[in-house]
Image (cartoon, rainbow, N blue to C red; front, side, top):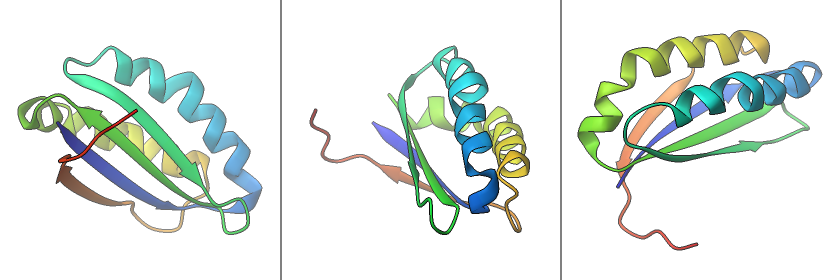
Length: 98
């Protein structure tokens, strides 16, 4: 399993709109992508910062989604009033338990 982690520096005033956009637009699109195994959105309501983690069954599926993920990330950044570009990191998931 692999994970893509996106760090956004949004504003507290726009955070609720960013959360709504993630739920209403980003999640449904992620679910339709081959190899997607889920997503997590973490927020700091005081600073407006957000961290999203998307999980993928294999690295190839994660890489194949990059172009669309970049566009969705830009849209989410705009909705959250983010300052600057999101930082993106990719990892191999070595422990996962629910």
